[in-house]
Length: 95
Length: 496
Image 1 (spheres, one colour):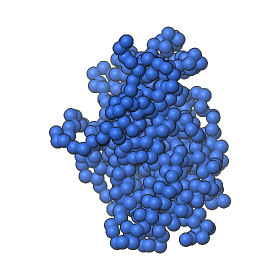
Image 2: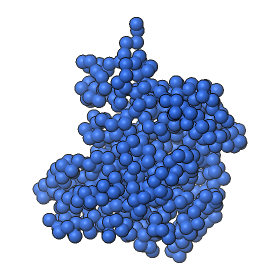
Image 3: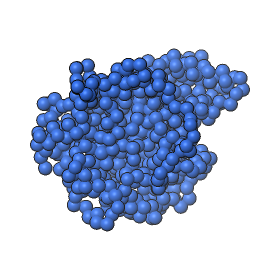
Image 4: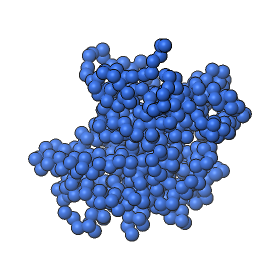
């Protein structure tokens, strides 16, 4: 399998990753070779095998519904690259 | 104050001996911290195991522990013992970079559960160690900041992704350290650096505050010179944490209580798939010798097979990258981490911040995972990998009906040279061929030193056990130590 430039660009768009032209070409080749390698899985007979997501028989683990302390707004915002008051700042979404 | 000569021999001692001296009052936490800080002054320019090490923080903490001990307060099982931390473990107010430009300035507002527990046990958090960016890699060469060197040969890599934590212990810059293991990232560097590294069963150690790579595979675990050190550190960090929904609520056994008692009638499984193509003959020789050691101690060797294991690497690189692509979606240039300075609309802000902040391997894995999860491919790739994952689990369940532990090589070769594999991602991925299945199945595994190549590079023996078999693994490791002295060797860099 060879991933076309167009496919690599599409995946990069889905992943919200800006790639340089150099990266685009390099990843195209590397991803194609990795996908060729993982393609072996398609030949493994798995009819009737349930997908296995993780190792523990834990489901719906919930804590008690009790108000408990959490991070203050100041702590939560401390690492924000741009903020205004108690808000994270993003570029305008609506014109 | 011990004389300089004493200080450098002090740092070569195993953690269990240091803890004893601290407890008996023969050694203060400050003396010990100073000895390790002096070792760092001498060897860090070569090894580059640490990304950041705040000496004052270390000395202040050691001083506080000494004061508490002197006041007769209860100080905890690790009191005064330095523990180095992989830099993907959140330490409150201390840089936690994941060796990524994305998190270059990130100071977490909270502590990982393992760090809370280390502090409760009296440990001295001793700096943050280098790793492959976001723990993605097998050599530390994917660090955005530096490549750590192997203490046994500084031209070579220490393994990865927890290469800094492994090199710190092997190079006697800290007696203990913590790493994380998603596909072998504790066991492989332990093997390549000639020390003990343990990957606990999924759910034994809380992942709260471990920066997520692949959530269904990640586990935090200890590095030490020997099994006793690994047991000491595991004891301090293991156990249920309500803040991690995948943490299992069951009692933690006392790993030290029967550590010295050999396992009677031990059945050691030898999987034929672990001795195939690609295995270096010197590694195979050392591992076979270790198997003979167990045999001479009364263990039975059992031939077993893991028929799905040839597909483990392929399975892993779909499961792990799919989870990574989702986990790393949080780095958006808005909440924390790198944000582009170019004027951008919202979508551009995301993609440019991520394009600038992530290194090549992280991007490659996000791309691979995104592709595997994308519409039209999810069934053929992601869901199929989860079905094969179940077959891998069932292989282990079958095998552990026939044996108590599985033994084999940890890595197919000893440490490779810096730069040797960095151009070919797939060949780097294959260096994890023996360690990856353990994470997919969620079972326990340990790497212990079992010899050296003719070139003087360490070789590791991997023991794997069923879920929650850490006691068995540690006791089996201890049995091997009683018949050999590999765990007492220190690199010439340190002894010379």
